Each structure stands twice: as C-alpha cells, then as structure tokens.
Image 1 (cartoon, one colour):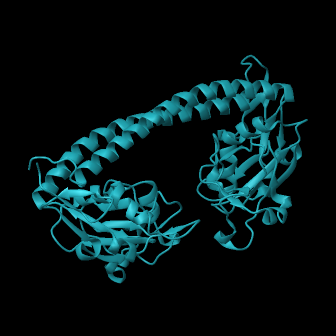
Image 2 (tube, one colour; image 1 turned 120 degrees about the horizontal axis):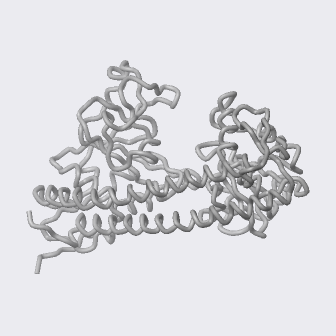
Image 3 (cartoon, helix red, strand yellow; image 1 turned 90 degrees about the vertical axis):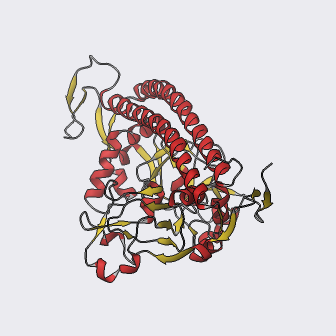
Length: 444
C-alpha cells in the first residue's frame, strides 16, 4: 500500500505522502497585462495575448509563432516590459461572462517576444516546476473550482490576483511531474485529436444546414420554377412569382428591449423571465442560465414584453445576428441587446422569417450594416430595412415544414456527435484529475 496523507483540501482528498500542498502565492510571482484597449491592437508587431484569446481560442497553451494573435507596436518593448512574457508563463483572463469560464488560462509555449494583453493576469514560477504538469493541474476541476467559488459578480465575474494567490497547488516531486505531464500529453493528445475530428464533422453539418436554408429561402423548392432578377446584387435571381420586401413592411413591431436601472441587483432567482443575448441561439432559446425580474419591474416594461411566437434577434456583441422564436407560454421580457420582431402573420409567418434571418441572406445584411456604421451592433431601425424574399403564406408554410424536417435530421446527427464530444471531454477531465491528484500513479 502506498503511503497517503490528508491534503487538507477537500478537492484533492488524500494524496501521496511525498507530494506537497502549497499556495500559488509561494510558488508564482504575479503581474498584469498591458494597459491597452482593443483599438491599440494591429496586424503586425509584437503578439499580445488578450482575455478574448484565452476564453475563445487558445485555452491551455499558445504559440504566437503558429497561432494567429493580434499585435501591439514595438514601442511597448520599452514602455510595457513588465507585461512581457517568458516561455512557460501563465496568463489568466481576469474577467469571465460566466462561472464556467472563471479561471480560464493559457501558457506561453515558445520563446519569441510576446505580451500579456488587456484584462489578463500573469503568473511566473519562482521555483523549478514542470510547466506542462502545472498546466494540467490548472485545467483540473479541483483547481478550477477554487477559482469559481471565490469570484464575485453576476453579469461579469472578476478573477483577481488575490484569488489566484490563495489557490492551493498540489506538487509531486519533479521527476513525477515530468512523467505525469508526458503521459497526459500523449493520452490527452489522442482524445483532443478525436474531439477535433468530431468538431469538424459538426462544423460541416452546420455549414450544410446554412447552405440548405439559404438555397431554400432564396430559390424555393421548385427547381423548374421560372426565375427573375431580384434587383439586389447579393441576392441574385428569385422565383418569378416571389417579391422582395423590407421586414418593416411585414411586421407589427420591431423594437429592442431595455435593462432597467439597478444593474445586477434587479435579477431574481424566480419571477418573470428576462432574456439576454446569451440566451438566444439559432437553434432556440437556452434557458439554463436565464435570469428573472420581479413583477413590478416587468410591469414598468410593458413595451418590451415578449409574446409567444415573437422572433428574437441579437443586435449587439459577439452573438450579433443569432435569432430564434420565443416559443413558450410564460411571460418574458428582453434586454437592450435583443430585438423583438412581431410579424403580421397574414403576410409573414415567424418561422419563415427566422430561417431567412439565420441564412446567409440575413448574415450578409448584418455585415453590410456593420460596414456602414458600428461594427458591433445593428439598430432595430436598420433591421427593419433588411430585405427578404416573400411568397404566399401557404408557400412559406411548405418551406418551413421542409426545412424543419431536413434541419431536424441534421440536428439529430449533430446532437449525437456533440454528446460524443462531451463524453470525451469528461473522460479527459477525469484522466487529468486522477493523475494530478495522485489517485493514479505512474512509474518514473
């Protein structure tokens, strides 16, 4: 039997007797990224790793010589030296939009000059450590839960140096760190390869859906139908009996919501559903992280109340252009990032509009609006000017039924593949947990 000892930390449980429990404060020195904004980034210069890179693209590790990263001017090599990174340095995002992303990090995997960018915290080892082992430790659930349980915020969660300094580390002797890192590199590399293959398959299916929707809402289902010029260059020809209309002429209401004064304090754990942009996806509403407002606040926002069958369209931020139908009977309201489109159903049915906006047709018009003004938003007035091919309500219903069936089959396949990806992700996490906490040992 191997000798074990209590770790003193519930997340780690019992650990091998020769392993050390310490705090990050005793093991790392800390700093922060450059005090810059997105406007300071450019295509050439010295790579700068921002919190957005960490959250969305280069979690766990980054090599700016291979990975595409925005840059800052070379003058920062003099004025921003404290944010200059060394090989093996860790970079944590200092904010997250959700609890799950709290503790997201990457580590620098090359020796070329690079900076920690805005909204980041840097951690540099003060003693000899195997960087890869520590990266796997930082990626483990026990470590991440320390961060998640310490952050503060509701809409945005803040990760501070103090939180990181107080986080506990579990360190085996150096040879075992190296052996664990090598084993996990091999095993996790194989899992990552299989996950990447499945993710490519999902992406191809998503592209197929988008192409199918676009072809159907712009050309129809009758391949022999006579065609005519739509009069719009990026739309091309449409069936001769169709017309092109602006959305505002086919609707009873187009308007964005609002967030009442009071910030995060307005949110309740129950009450009236309050829909934010992060709840709106092309495949429907995601209500697992929905917030609520109380009855009195909802009554003060009658003009932005949602009805069943309304189309909800994200008009700002990274999710701009995503839209879905509000298809539940419960009362709800929306914030200022979500636009409510209430169609005149004698002219335009909601599900046809949803498909049209989720097609390349809708995305092209979002892009045109952004090129002509604010790159991060589309006003609801501009949305009303979006053009869509229009046909009889009966033909709209036929198109919707066809796309519901075809996309439903594709969605079933996508769901199976995403389930397999999640199973592999959980397996990878369990593998990391077992080795970085000493539940499984390897010869070294």
